[in-house]
Length: 168
Image 1 (cartoon, rainbow, N blue to C red):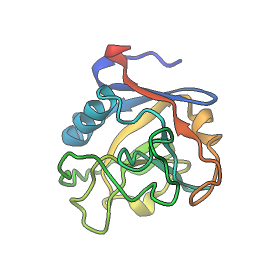
Image 2: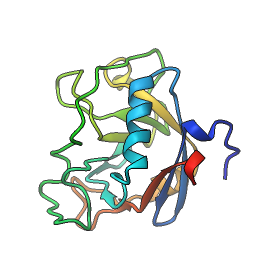
Image 3: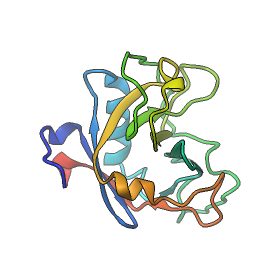
Image 4: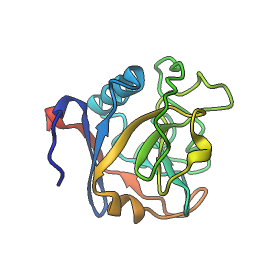
């Protein structure tokens, strides 16, 4: 596992094949980083499925409203919700959407990000300046690469648990 320099701004995401360590970029996108920590600390991300996984593009998850695989789960609704917290304003930066970066998923409204996010499988620079980058995988990208593909996958993988490293 990667050396964790800032446990308060590091996420430990447990997937079926192992732990993914994500460095949050709180200096670049403070509201998005704070939201991920808040939802992780409340357990909202635990058991949430990857509902949109496109080979050669990205894996999307984080629908805490409809994506929990253990709480009245309906795969057709996964990806249509967020949290009960207010939407976040865009925090665009010059950071590119490189392989392993986290982007805030949103509707066509740039200020509609809430709980959903995606992890880029490859450099997706056509997304630059359109979606907030607020984290990067620093260890365990091979586990992200192994997530089941589909829109939605028939048997979606899920985030078993998501924790802030300072709390683990």
